[in-house]
Amino acid sequence: MFSLKSVVKRSKAAGLALIVLLVVRALGWSQETARPPIDEEIAKQDKIYGSRGAEVPEGYVTNRRLSDYAALLPTGFCDALGSLRSADQWLDVGAGDGQAILDYYAPADEATPIEKCARLAGRARAVALSIEDRRTDKWQQQAASLGSDRLRYLFGKRLREYSSEELGKFQIITDVYGGFSYTEDLSQFVEKVLSLVETGGVFFTLLQSVLLEDGKDKPNIYYQTELVDTAGQDVKVCSWLKKTSCVQVGCESKTDWTPTEVINIRKVCSDISVPRMKLVEFEAGYPPSRRFQLEQ
Ligand SMILES: C[S@@+](CC[C@H](N)C(=O)[O-])C[C@H]1O[C@@H](n2cnc3c(N)ncnc32)[C@H](O)[C@@H]1O
Figure 1 (cartoon, rainbow, N blue to C red):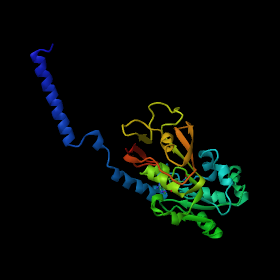
Figure 2 (cartoon, rainbow, N blue to C red; figure 1 turned 30 degrees about the vertical axis):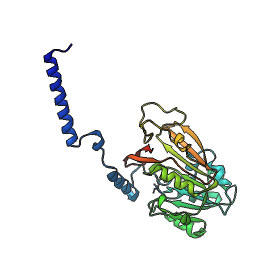
Figure 3 (cartoon, protein in one colour; figure 1 turned 60 degrees about the horizontal axis):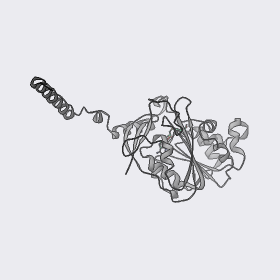
Figure 4 (cartoon, helix red, strand yellow; figure 1 turned 90 degrees about the vertical axis):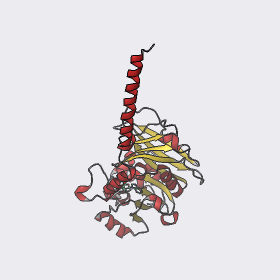
């Protein structure tokens, strides 16, 4: 039983709490509004893309080699690249300097052993795609000597802004810390990539700091890309991708320095549909931190 005195005390405390809450809300101090708006963060992200010389943040790596791609991407990547014929096409989305493609086309004596994995057949035409122009002198020289039919470097817009006619179709699409790790619209990005893959072709990519398919990531760690369902419950990136129609998804969960899902998606028919996710949080970075929620 409560005494009259304690009831008065409690209602005074409750009243005070309500006033504090209303003041906090009015001043916009709720946790939700304390975060910078998504638009501001996207503008910060654009500055990272636009950075040059000493301004390029140390962690924004744009010059990974083909051997790095071979080490980071799923096991079948090298064999798939090696099996391409000269009329086939390879697209690297988020290519940075395009160094991996330069290695692919490098004269045989310059190749390190791992790079030779791609030399089993005729070299395919290759397209490097980047938001910003990071072509090096080496790229310009190699592209000039091979001709634009073999090597293309496209920049100035995001993948979603290209039409299929501009890009063509690809047997292999790769993405190493490119659009898949940076996009603000994950579903649209995956759908666009898969629309550009030939039936039978493969998209090779990875995503770091995510909830792993094999459940072996440590509890309470920081996730850079978070996916949740309509009720706010965690969704694993691979479980989400496996709901896409017309694809076979393979995932290798790695826990080297951060939980990373290494992903290959084979297109098996043309009617691709990716379950929609909307962006609910975004914080600029390299890569940015993102939270997506499944739409109804
Ligand atoms: C960190 S760099 C990675 C470069 C390269 N893959 C490497 O590993 O060295 C990120 C690249 O992704 C590109 N990028 C990010 N989002 C993209 C998008 N939606 N469409 C095309 N390129 C994108 C950036 O412009 C940049 O070239």
